[in-house]
Length: 48
Figure 1 (cartoon, rainbow, N blue to C red):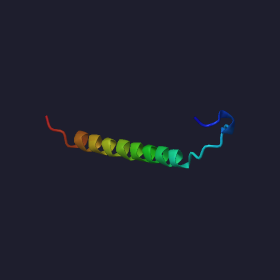
Figure 2 (tube, rainbow, N blue to C red):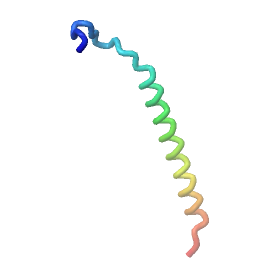
Figure 3 (cartoon, rainbow, N blue to C red):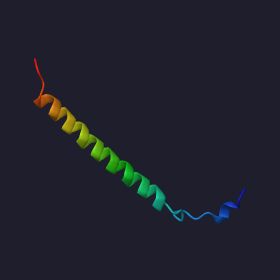
């Protein structure tokens, strides 16, 4: 195990974590928009 005194709080590179989170938010936003468009399309052309 590495010497615990070598660890410095806040020194970890989290750039990949931030990119992944931004990608997740972008995917979620576009998925939500797409689902809303499908629901609007279905509501506009529904038949009874």
